[in-house]
Image 1: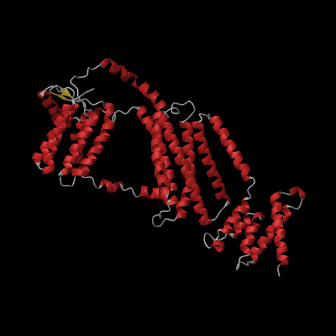
Image 2: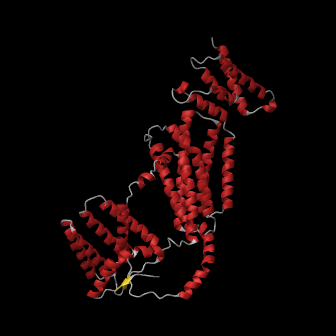
Image 3: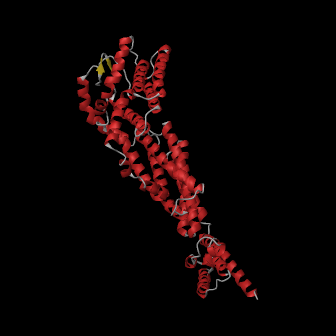
Length: 501
């Protein structure tokens, strides 16, 4: 591992640590941009130097005695006081000198005398800013192993799919993505600003990647050559392992939870909280866009959890992954509940149909399936148990559905919540009521018996359903309890009509 040294000190940076350090350095540079670029400098310089000293201490660690620490803190405070008093070239030089002396004193364990102090200060101040380019050139950024790529393929690919589904389901997310103005952000860049960022990165880099050493590492060319020869085989094998390995699953779950948290927060605000939607957007359109894509999202999420948490797999026993899985399943259950509310809002506006009833039942099954996945993980059951549990749940739901008179329920709901009866909602779609069959007759009668509803065509269609029902029950072999209840209703209605004056 190479390093840059002066007067006996060197500041080596492991290539593997460069990507993480680069992220911290970029954040620090962005902080400097916010403090300095386009603004007058004053207290901001003291704040920046203080923050940089803190990052250096975190990076290098304190290795001096209590007395040495007090000395370094005193030097730092004394150097920052002139900046607080008034900013000028002299106070800035005092501040820079103070942070260099304080940081080198706190973090360099090899300092024994005044000469060592001067050597450390020269290394940090004169050599450090020129380390940025060589360290980046040696880092993993330019020699990324296949295994490192593999752990990001599944997280990024599935995150893109989930983002597309959430955008198609939620017009608010779609609008946010559409309003991303990358060209507008690029318009804020300039040669001067790029130069400012480059200089700031170079200056802050040695403080972020603070390491001290006196000895030059010994080269081992033989081992290096052997590792280089075996690298392709090791990379190919690690790529396969890492593609769906614990690291890829962990990254996936972190990204998925963040994406779903946005959707959950928007639903809590606009669906459950009742906050007014943006202009040109109605609750009906918001609800209609969401139900079915969100169900597909929940199904894909369930499939990923089953693949990731395979019994006996490497990810199943890792506590962070299990916790993230539980959080993500909880968000998916919330997603399903929000989908049910979306469907309810849509039905209130556009009435009820067979397909919307089927969608509601399907959503309930998906929610129950997600809960069963949690039970499978928590109880340490097999996928075979999960399949049987889902089949049993499906059978139970279908068995209950066998006793529900859906034509009667749909027609009754549509008439009761119609604009003609309740004053709100959609107008009655009479042809659709007729298409539901004879079981819709009670709701049709309620609609026709309202004042101002006479229509001979509708009366004929109603009588046609009565005749159709009579043909369906023309034999005792065709008798059923539901048909018998409808016949009792028709007989009672006919008796009441005959008795009416």
